[in-house]
Length: 304
Image 1 (cartoon, rainbow, N blue to C red):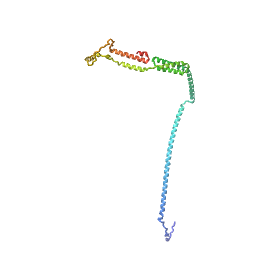
Image 2: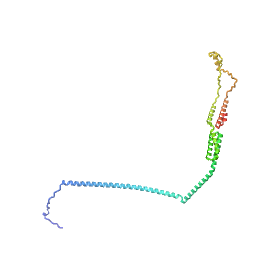
Image 3: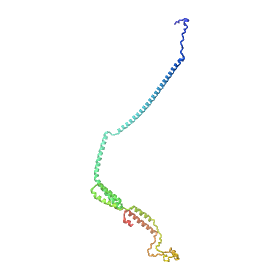
Image 4: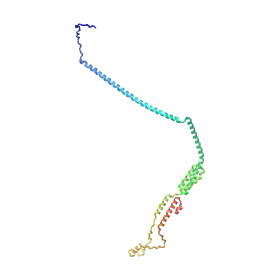
């Protein structure tokens, strides 16, 4: 490579005319505007980035929530599927335990046959009992009449006898048999007679006699007392109360009594044994009266 040596005069630089420098005061506003625009652009880009990031995070969380919900639904579906499988297995086991269709049909036919036989048997029983039921009711009415007669004769219970006769009449009325007209007529007469009987208060009479019997047990012996029914001999005097004879006679009359009816029967006092016998006799008489009152024995009651 060769070098060309230029002359010194030629090497010296030629001073060019200096160009005018720009005014610093004129260039400063332009630089500030450009820097502000860049800052605003950077802020906008940052805000856009933050918004895009937030939206991305929200979308991610929404997707996660939807995914969790889908997982829960899938688990529920799995549980339901498992329950359906278990139910299907149980139904299959029950179906396996059921008898076959032929056996079920045979059983149905047997039940139908038994029902028909039962209906025919019921009809036969009704036919047999229909004829004898009337006789049974008549026998029941006869039994009621016998009970009424027994109650009336043995216990003198008019009310019970009337109720029994009324029951027998009801049975004859239900039979609706014209042949029972005469029997119902007699029953009506008996009911009228029973209802016309005067019913004394036997229970009250029995209790009254019981109270009298208790009083008999409390009887005590009483000492004799003199009862002056006449005038004293003071009437034989001259009537002067101040006389000495009247005063003396009043004192003596308190200790001495003159009986002008000595010929009458004087009964002795009852001894202790005799008083006990009287109590016993009265108690027995009252018991007899109580029995007669309960049994309706008028003559026995009057005698007691």
